[in-house]
Image (cartoon, one colour):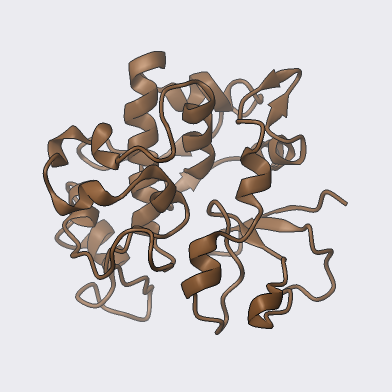
Length: 243
């Protein structure tokens, strides 16, 4: 989802500091309008989301409730109905809901400039990865935070795009500073994330950067510091090691 937001920024369809309500106009006037696109891709929306999985009931788990409980028909509405526990931008908390918001705003932004199915027009087809598939809810909102499928080769091409600083065959798909920002621990992570079993996070990528001011060592001791990864719930991995 964060990469698709980056593509929207590169194409002039969105800005990171825009309110999500710039694109999700049906929520205009609600407290969630204080959430920006940058908050969504850095897990800093402030929503009181509970990221629990198979060992919890849907009454406890926000994500299970979204997919299989009361939220399944309109999953974006379910996410944005979650109360704000913190002012957006002031607290880091891993959230599939945040990634869903990012995917929804990216689609809305890109539809204005690139028509229907813009994810493929502006990104996946361009990198030769047309087999990417996004599950959608009954409202047609892409998941983005999970339920995204592709072949191993297509996932590799996505990683290679980031290895090549967001460029593909001479065409810049991501802004010039996007990969650098994506792979640098976010300010909100450094200020507020718990150190217990948490890998440093940038623009939704997991990082191997030590954070000296918090005496936090790099989490993957045998890998170079510049390594970063997308890590799926069932063990899927895209690992990029520029060095």
